[in-house]
Structures are given as structure tokens and as C-alpha cells.
Amino acid sequence: MIRTVTSTPYTDQKPGTSGLRKKVKVFQQANYAENFVQSVFDVVEDKAGATLVIGGDGRFLNREVIQIAIRMAAANGFGRAIVGRGGILSTPAASHMIRKRGAIGGLVLSASHNPGGPDEDFGIKYNIANGGPAPESITDAINARTLDIDRWLTVDAADIDLDQDGEVMVGDMPVEVVDPVEDYAALMETLFDFDAIRASKLTMAFDAMSAVTGPYATEILERRLGFAAGTVRNGTPLPDFGGHHPDPNLVHAHELYETMMAPDAPDFGAASDGDGDRNLIIGRHRFVTPSDSLAMLAANAHLAPGYAGGLKGIARSMPTSAAADRVAAALGIPAYETPTGWKFFGNLLDAGMATICGEESAGTGSDHVREKDGLWAVLLWLNILAVRGESVDAIARDHWAKFGRNYYARHDYEGIETPRADALMAALRASLATLPGKQFGDLTVETADEFAYTDPTDGSISRNQGVRILFTGGSRVVFRLSGTGTTGATLRVYLERYEPVGGDLDRETSDMLASIVAAAESIAGIAQHTGRSAPDVVT
Ligand code: VG1
Ligand code: CO
Image (cartoon, rainbow, N blue to C red; front, side, top):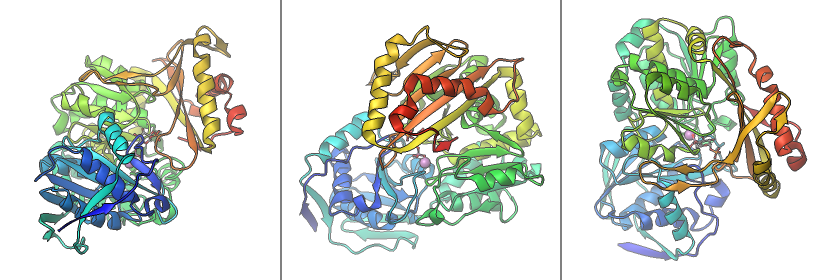
């Protein structure tokens, strides 16, 4: 029996960079999650009889919203729901499941790198039939629907047992509870040379940050690849991630960093985020920036069986360093520059224009799914290390010697009052026309603009994607406001300096970027607008 529940709109359900993210308390308001899920379902065409994948990163509220979504899917006429056991599906595993099972789409319940728990964050993201995040045309339609929604549909049915594999009926809809790891692990075995990695006898430390990758990493790294028990740390997904931010950067994964800088460090260290789509790579005594990791993976991908045929193209988000562009040029393949967020890579991957994509925020992935994929990046690195028989440090130095080095850092100013952050961006925009030719220390502005992207496959245009100031010689600073936060505004300042082949290739990043940091302050007046003299997080 389908039941219609009367509701009224919430005005704050606009998806950001990656889905709708709010405080748990916001999601706990009457009809809040239901309104959003119904708005998604109202926008999905041809859902009658179609398959829907549902899973999440295990954070607080995950199981409750999954039960709600299952009943609503049944009432909205879906033909089948596939749910990860325990409510668990990493973002890349959900993407693969949608593709493998021919689903019409999926709900991924996650706020990714944001903290979890009763007073922290929750999120809902909708992925389409290609397995990727819904593009802006669809998220805009969902948002429009949330503003005039007046009812949601459900069936009267009890919660299902999420911990029991198998099939049960909810209303007229079969619900399959499946192993969240099996299909994903099998996919990884098709891409990488597991025998070579096993034979390499490399040692490693993997920090799952008490988030969703624990079960995936334990199965793949410890069981299938034979890494020692204990290689995976913090391997049990916890609803509050143990009270930490499941954000794999040098601030939140500092224990891993310390392990990797110690005299007895293993060969390779890595971490992933809340929903398993990001990766942090630290070799023994060598941190690799995510932008460099993208470039190095692209340059060496042909060493792994899944990429032996070469790459079709490389795509990166605009704030990501240009290191990958130099690899694309050397390989004679196209390089694409997209706005921040994985949803912009989907069309390029579907069209066969790009094979590998990446973002400075520790996201890398390929055309094997339509999301970024943390463990995929770890396995590709391991495959490369096994084949080359060299350390991460040696591979990094070799890369810079060939391509030059893009020194890079991101400075985040978190929890700024939104009007102040908006004022900073407005002043910056207003000054753009006056900047070219201006001198800041040893830097001269070449061009200054606000990034807009025209999708080469469908011609859709996305504007206001960040302010970029390019200096002569390939250095630059980019300013944008985060679209994933839940309190106030976060200003991200992306700093990059290119040092050519033969230059200073092994210096401290902070020294190399000092003049760009100073220029960023003069150009944007960060201290004056935000009242902050230093960033909260440097990655
Ligand atoms: C951030 C990152 C962006 C990433 C997004 C989702 O967005 O900068 O590169 O795609 O998070 O990642 P923003 O708008 O806060 O800068 V995940 O792993 O949090 O889904
Ligand atoms: Co994530």
C-alpha cells in the first residue's frame, strides 16, 4: 500500500560540489531527508521497474536514512533496490555497482571528508546511470523540485535486516542486500597485476580513518595482496569516525605522516576519506602532493595491465596544478581543465576523451568507474612501484627531473562569516580587469579571470568556478569558496609555482611559495576581509 505524506518545502536543499550536505540535526527535522529523496525520485525519469543502488559511508544516520529510502523507492515504483550489507558502499564501489547491475542510478549517503556524529555532518548524493554524480542540469532540477514539493511517498513496511545478505520484499519491490566489497575487489583485480605487487614484498601502512575503506582495504591489501596483518589501521567504519575528520591530508592524517617520516618507515603509506574516493600518498620519507600524484600516475599508468594500451587524455580540475598537463603534452594526448567536482569528468570519460582524472583535493580516478577512487590510486601506485622496483622518492625525483616541478599548496580559511567571504570574492572580481601587468614582489600578473567551463561534449556552460590569477612563468594563485561545508564559508586559496627542469627541484614547498602567498594577500586582502592572519589548514 502506497502512502502519501503531506509535506512543505525547505528552502536550503541546494546540492553543492558533491550532493546535499548539512548538519545531522538539520537532516533530523521532520520530512527533511524525505523531501530531498522524493525530489530526487520526482526528477528521475523512467524509474518504473528500474534498479536503484543504495549505500553510504557508515556515518551517523546512515542506516536510518537507508531504511527510509528503501520504503520510498518501493512506493515510487522502482523495480529493485540493491543495498550494501551494513548500509556500506564506498563511493567508487557504488559507482561500479550502478554500472555493473545496469541500475538507473544510486543514492550515496555520505558527507565524505566532513566529520560525522550526532552534532556533525550528513549528506545525500544522487548518481546517474553512468555511475557518476548527477550533472548540474539534474542537481538544479532536484533543487527546483525541493522548492515546491508538497508530498512524499512511502509504503508501510518494517525496517529490513541490513546485516543479512539475500533478498527480501518491501512492498512490491525486491531488496537485495549484497557484499559491498566483492564486485569492487574483483574489478581491481582486472586492472592491476596483483601477482607482481605480492611478489614485490613492499611494506605499507594504510589509514582507513575509521571510515568506509576499512573493509575494502582489509580484503584487498591484507587478504588478496598478502600485506601483513595490521597494515590497515583504523579499519572499522565508525559512525563518528572515532571523533576525527576522515580527511586524508597532512593535518588530519598526521599519524600516518609521522609513521612515514620515521627512520623505520614502511615503503609506502596511504589514507582514504569518509566515503573512500580520496587518497593520500606518502612514500617513505616523501610526501607526494595530490596534483603530483595525478601526474606521476598518468606518466606511469601504462605499467599496469589495465592501462597498458595507453591513455586517451588526462583531465584535472582547474585548481589542480598543471603538472598533469606536462605529462599529457609529453604523451601527445589532450589535457582538459574542468571546474572543481567529479561531476564534470563524467562526460569526458563517457565520451572516451579522458582515461585518468584528478583533483588537488586528493581525488584521482579513471574510466573504470565514474567517481574518484581512493584504493584504485593506492593500487596503481603499488603496481608502479612493483614494476619499477624504485622508491616513491626516486620516482618523484625522476619525474621532476623530466618535467620540472609544480610546487603546490592549498590554504583553507574555514568557518568565515558568509557575508565577509562573499565580500572578499566580490572585491576580487571587481579588481580583475586592473590586475594584468601589475607587479607583486618578483611576480608579474599575466592574466586574471573568473573560470568558466564549456563542456566539450554537450556545450553546457558552468560559470563562476573560481578566480584565477596567472603570473608570468607558470605560477598562479586561485581563489574559490568551498561548496561542501556546512557552517559559514570556507575560502580556499590554491598556490602554485612552476620550477623548470634544471631549476631548484628539491626545496621546501613553503619557501618556494612564500612570494605567491604574499601576492595572494596583497591581491585579495585576506586578513582585512576575514580577520584571519593565517590559514586553518594547509595541505
Ligand atoms: C571539495 C574539493 C573538491 C572535491 C569535493 C568533493 O570541494 O575541493 O575537489 O571534488 O570536495 O570531494 P569544495 O567545494 O569544498 O572545494 V568528497 O571526497 O568530499 O566527495
Ligand atoms: Co570523498
